[in-house]
Amino acid sequence: GYASDIEYQARMLGTAKVEVVCLAQTSASLFDDNYDATTKRRMSEAAGVPSLTSAEAIGQAVRALGARRIGLVSPYSQEVISCAKQYYERRYGLDVLAMEGFDATDAYAIGTLSADRAVQAFARMNRPEIEVLVVPGGNFPTMPSIAEWEQQLQKPVVTTNQAALWAMMGVMKVAEPLSGLGRLLEQLPAV
Image 1 (spheres, rainbow, N blue to C red):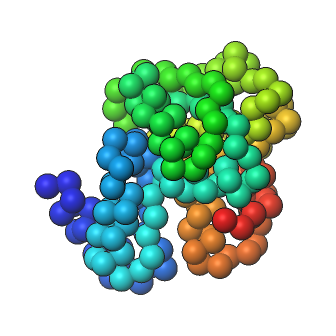
Image 2: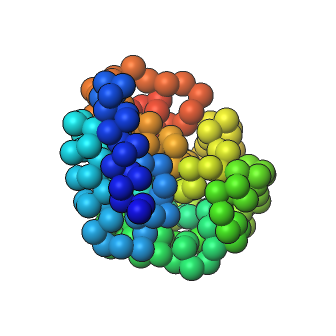
């Protein structure tokens, strides 16, 4: 099953002597209150190292940036983005002031979306009270666009892969900023 697949993959990563394992499947965390804790425990036991999920990395990243009020732009369906709203409000005390999804139904569809879709959604939802724009979806090709979006919008943008990288760097105690990938990786705020 799915749990044994995760354990197997984590065990394989452990044989590579990695320092941390991250599951970059944000939507998986949104439907089960125990998913993050259970999955992290399984991954850590199998790999022998700390682990995290990308969903929790996003919540921690927004809080580390000192923000609470977010706009959520996602490749997901309305059902999934509604679950994301509940997840971030309940677990991280965030206030989702606006949200928009693109109704992608699988990882392949998410990967084919243009980053321009996010720009258009930002334009529709951005307002002064939104402190951070959050873009979940690990297969949504956002990394090359983050710095440009932040410059245009004059506020931080947090994405799945960026937040996961930031969280893993924190676990590994890497303090060297990464330029060109947004404020989160340039400033490296502590959790």
